[in-house]
Image 1 (cartoon, helix red, strand yellow):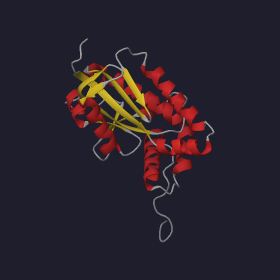
Image 2 (spheres, rainbow, N blue to C red):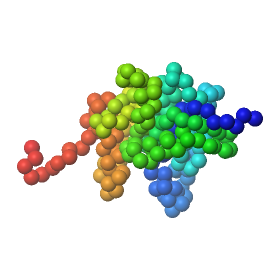
Image 3 (cartoon, helix red, strand yellow):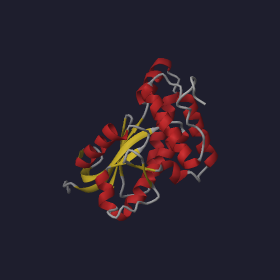
Image 4 (spheres, rainbow, N blue to C red):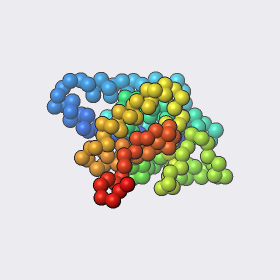
Length: 225
C-alpha cells in the first residue's frame, strides 16, 4: 500500500450554528435538526461520490473534501463545493470554509495532511462569513495572470471565495430566493453579533448577485433620511 503524501486540493467546510442545533435537539428532542443534518450528510455523498477522484470525510459539523491536484480540475472541484453550499442554503443552513493546495494523505480512516491544516486555518481564521475562501497561493498557482474564472469572486477585503449563489442561481431560482429571504429574515435581528454579521453578509452577497434588496439599513433615526 502506498502511504506517501501527494499534492491535493483540500477543502475544509464547517456548518455554522451546529452547536445551537445540537443544544436544541437535546433540549426538545423533536428530531427536526437531526433529520435535517442527516439529509445534508447524505446529500454530501450524493454530490461528491460520483467523482471517483474525490475523497470525503464527514464528522460532526465538519466536512473534508480532497482530490489529487490538477490545475485543469479546479473549476470542477469548486463547482461541486458550490453545489453543496447551495443545498445547505436551500435547507436554510450556512457553511464557511477554506480551500488549499498542499501535501495530503487519507485512506478513509486516517488522514495526514498539510493541506487540511492549511484549509482549516483559512476557514477558522480568515473566512469569517458564510463563504468558502480560496487560499491566495492557490489563486496565484492556477491563475498567475490574474484572470479568474466566473466561479470565483473577489471581495473588497482582498479575499477570493467560491461564488455559490452565482454558480447555482439558475437552478430552481424561486427556491434559492425564498431560502435566502427566509434565512435573512429569521436571523437579521439576532441578539448575537456574530450571527447577525454573517446573515448581513449573506444579504449583501445576494443583493450583489441576484439584485435582491435584503440588506437592512445600517442607520435609523436622528437625521437619517
